[in-house]
Amino acid sequence: MSRRAGRQHIAAGTGAAREGAAREGAALEGAALEGADDGGGRAAAAERPAAVMPGRRRRMLLLLAVALLSLLAAAAYAATAFQDARNGQAAIPDVRTAPVAALPAEPFVLFRNTAAGQGYGQVAFTPLAAPAGTRFLTALSCDRAYASRAFISCLATKNGIPTRFEAATFSPALQPLQSWTLGGIPSRTRISPDGSLVASTVFVSGHSYASAGFSTETVIRGADGTVHGNLESFDLVLDGARIKAADRNIWGVTFVPGDGNAFYATASSQGNIWLVRGDLAARTLTVAATGVECPSISPDGRRIAFKKSASGSLVGERHPALLDLATGTITVLDEQRNIDDQIEWLDDNTILYGLPRDETGQDSDIWSLSTLPGARPELFTEHAWSPAVVR
Image (cartoon, rainbow, N blue to C red; front, side, top):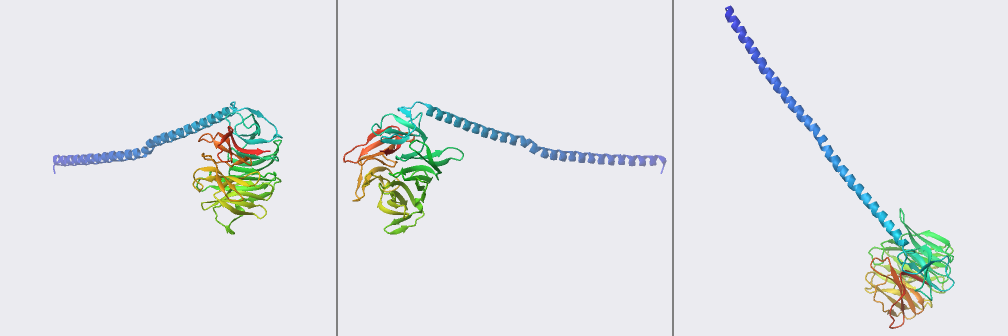
């Protein structure tokens, strides 16, 4: 080979090497670029959650803000309602009132004051001779109250966290005697004529005798602190046979005058409503009549006033009626409005009962009704509830 041919061969080889190197460099550059693209994709993927997170944080902050505003609104409403209640209690009532430190010696009617303003919810009384006159406020706040010459029975709701229910007795000088915890919402209370016994009924579940699945607890205690127990633990007897149904409810005790062992009450089971006569010593409840709810025995012990269901069941309206214990005769009185109060006797021929003024049930009046034929209801005391006649 000539030197010229050799130089040409070397040049050709060198060009080929350069071309190969160029191709390799291009390939490496492409790979690098591809790798760069892949790395960028991975970086973008890694950055996506970071991009999403601010959106999630915004949503969380928005939810927290809404929750906080809701709490603030609720707190403002509660504060406003509390202040309105305080202002309402501080307002001058529409009835004449006066403070008092003891029960009077003369006959009187005790009741729960429902007049809006100062003294709302307090136990009050008026002289029996002037039931529409000045009412005397005792400063005792009760949901249900009753009285005898011996003491006052007061069932009350104690607001707080949690809400509590309490029974207490007070002397004629309005000094505390006893107190104990109740198992539910106050409903009824009665004191025996001689002042030796006190009964209380509460709703353990439900808040009305017409509500489905309600459950009551009725307990009789002695003024000396003796607890005779829940009446549901007594034997319920019908025609000589013991009723063992688990759905029994007992409420609305009324004590027999002159007998420290006997009382009447309402019992219900499996849709039945019975008047039962109770025996504390024997711990029995014996069915005496059907369809008699929330009894109240007359001062002479001859008749029972009660709420008679228009439907014959626990639902529907109820109207005052009388049961003659000697003959079993039932007489429905001329009161067309629905009553949901345990009737009280003003005397042997006149009954008292409360009626709400409106659907809220916050205010009510006490009405009187003679048991004589043709008698019509008469307003007895305005803005009052749960009467007790003390002679």
